[in-house]
Length: 111
Image 1 (cartoon, one colour):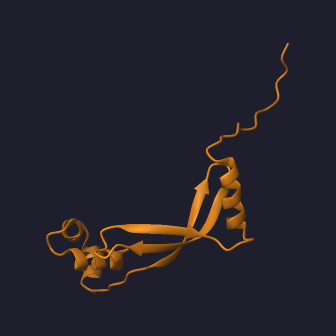
Image 2: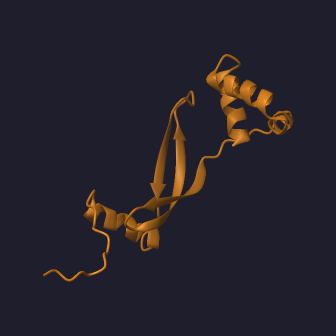
Image 3: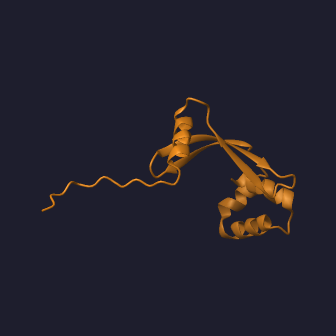
């Protein structure tokens, strides 16, 4: 995270919101100030994400970030290899859509 903040600061400059955040964090946290002085920079373009769906549970996905030229916006592309558990859950979501299912309740005797 810190390296991503440094990359944002570097691309947007000292008058940016990233710079405001850096100044606030330096004042609030000696640990942050120390880490900031290391000057570590990185931009991650690929990652792994876990989405939690209320009906299907955890869905493990690969994530790739595509940035605009000025890096002010990013498009996240979430994918999973065919025949994997994540792929099957994504296919199921295409069928389920926004539908909600009732939770199981204890049977009651109705008179």
